[in-house]
Image 1 (cartoon, rainbow, N blue to C red):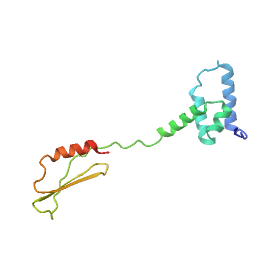
Image 2 (tube, rainbow, N blue to C red; image 1 turned 90 degrees about the vertical axis):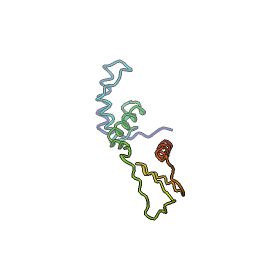
Image 3 (cartoon, rainbow, N blue to C red; image 1 turned 60 degrees about the horizontal axis):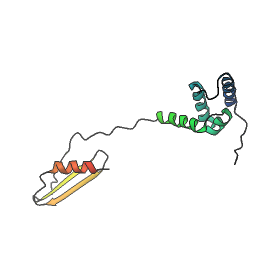
Image 4 (cartoon, rainbow, N blue to C red; image 1 turned 90 degrees about the horizontal axis):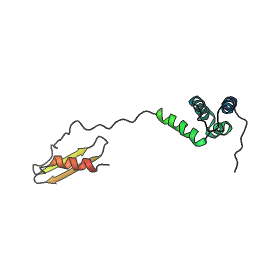
Length: 136
């Protein structure tokens, strides 16, 4: 299956002419200078990867990687995860003396609630560490 190639846009044709001149003065397989790649990326952003790579005889995948890589570097960086500065334990006012509740909430919003009757577990910090280790 062949793609139909329409008329080459003028900016692509100009870069094609510059590339042909550069190629005629350099040995085959010589690495293309970055200014040519940068100009091709800008044209690909405007006219599309195939419509730029084909007339310029550039590697389609290489041009696509440069275009996608440029777009990824322009995105906002992800927020770093923060660890909880403190853990608050609040006993409900309606709890009976022989009932207890322990609730954990992570910075990502996941929650764990442990409820029981009789004596409360003595090692609640170990419970918190174990939950933190298996939390998704």
